[in-house]
Image (tube, rainbow, N blue to C red; front, side):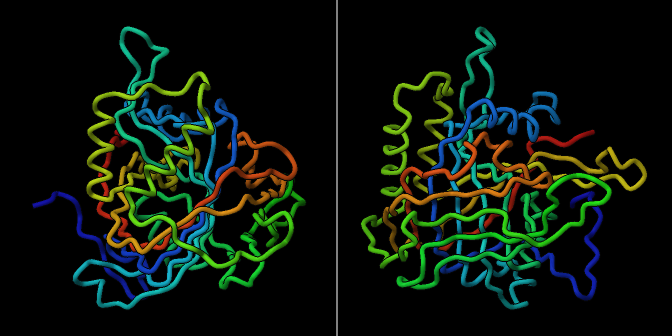
Length: 330
């Protein structure tokens, strides 16, 4: 029997019980080169510094993925909340391929990887219920916004986020809904028909990893894998699991610069079906400069229009499964 208090169920409650199923999902992913040191600072801010080094998460490569997901049917897998229907959502954001691990006791400059996964510092969702569930239950850095993406082969290949932004931090500045960033073909062309060239999740991971390795071949400063990583990679490929790492926290009501609750969470995306995937043409990323969302600064992205590297798409179902606390502030 858990010693934790029972969650009080109230009318109008939209934070459904996990696991959360995301069925009939089409996800588009585009690689963007980023500054290694900026990503290290961002990961340290979310994991190493709050935990005092108990949990260390580092970028796996000097890059981020610009991700757009069209989830046709999101619902709870819990026997009770699974009876409460389903909803559609669109998610756009930035995903950092990361590694959780430890520094070598004999050589503090060497970081040994134990688990690979993802950290999402910026996510924008067009479904408010999905924002609530993601932020409160797991610690997703989700915000509500208008999320645009192509819905057919003839639509322009444009992925766009509009949300509440504050351009400069002054008492006179009004928060406004504005376009925050867009990702599109340089020639304004259509997305085109999605032709599947990848038949399994394992094949997608292997081919994507190979392309990443070729893209970053010979770059110094990348983390050192360990035997624990190899075991975890094998288990992930076999079981279709993709771990994610979160900083979950709630601001204290009496001391605004303190957290009433703060923890580092790990939760897996559990692949339940894979229908195909393939690779995409390069796109161009444009990010608004604003004080409220310093995306380019935080991720170490180049100013102006940014050309992406390779992109890929996948059609699949997945569950965001039960998570676990890696660390909790006393």
